[in-house]
Image 1 (cartoon, rainbow, N blue to C red):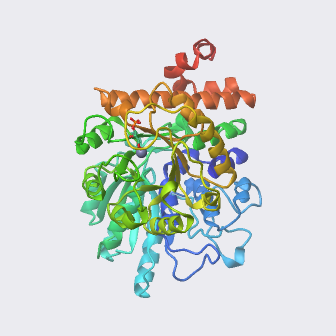
Image 2 (image 1 turned 180 degrees about the vertical axis):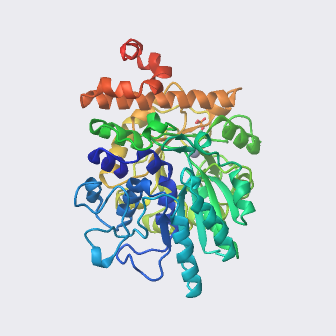
Image 3 (image 1 turned 45 degrees about the horizontal axis):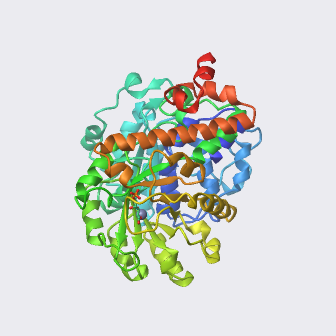
Length: 528
Ligand code: DX5
Ligand code: ZN
């Protein structure tokens, strides 16, 4: 969001590339690297070399949020006299006003960063230091001959302290990479140069963490992560569109773009619904249908009048998919069993506030955060969040608001929950909550719009998915409804700030398939 603000203020910049690498940079700075924003030159730090330096707005946003400089400074992007220039300038204590704290490498000319990284990695090895070096490479940048010279050199020096991450978004300044200069078979090429190669979805934080952990265990070889990414990810009309490689969005659209980034909605099939068991098949079908995450309802027959499955099942399912696991613990004494679920490698673990006091929750939250798992809290339809939650909002990633009484799939949605959802979302945001509101129970295509409008951004769907004979089709239908809900919201926002027709023009290709439900067919048709 900061990246978009900066680019729009500056009137120029690279939105597409900033978004394709957002999760990569975020994971490095907030989950993986050892670094110290108050001491950028700290001797023990890991290094991040942003070789594809044009993703600067996203890089600056990451550094600002990490604490290297104030977030407001993003507004000075590309301004005369400012330190945040279009291509970042390496930090120097002697040039405090002209260099950027946290930046290790002055970029601009493509193709050089990997060679610089090799220099740092060799120096660290010679000094017997454990610091690691992470380099972000572009796929367009990989046209440069120097990248391949560096690719040859790193294995020669057995640089197992070096990880290069290729932002494989398949689009460069002049078009699609495969038209400009084909890179495939990319994996085989790097393997032939004697690198350890791991391929991942570069927007899935859990896959990035897992790959970086694996890279850390490799000895005597550098690692290349091929991170498959989407240029412009997060803003639908910029997605995979070469036009937006280096073009700034009009400033008047900024508020709507920011709203879009906040309005992402995840579809989470709950596998306890439908025919009993056969969970593996259900997970596979959800993945094929395009679900975003898998919702796993753990019930112990005590907190709720039903028993489903436990950590051993979660562990088995973990092997068959890389989709994030959203584990909803409906059990008494969640702290007692927590470690089993941590070991089963869940991504979100949610506990009911009805099952723990503040002190227990704090222990649970610490354990989860230390294991790289997102903590969540859940409330029953008749419960409100206790006041103590509001002093922990910054460390909670998910709040589940139950829209049925927990225990069984296939119950009727309780509409009285909606006003509570609106109020709770608002109050949480006022207290700095930046995570997802999740609605759970009885959600289907008929009420999705209302649930979305009430603030929920993770939508659990059990029977609406597994009660259908066409699981794939059911997920697509829910996704379509979620898209309608999102576009409706954005058009309303654009209308309120007087940019309705401009917004619809820029968004036309996204809006066409939704036009009849949005009741804008005529208006859209009239736009040239
Ligand atoms: C209820 C569970 C829900 C539920 C979802 O206790 O937490 O996840 O099973 O299934 P549907 O959508 O059928 O209510
Ligand atoms: Zn649930």
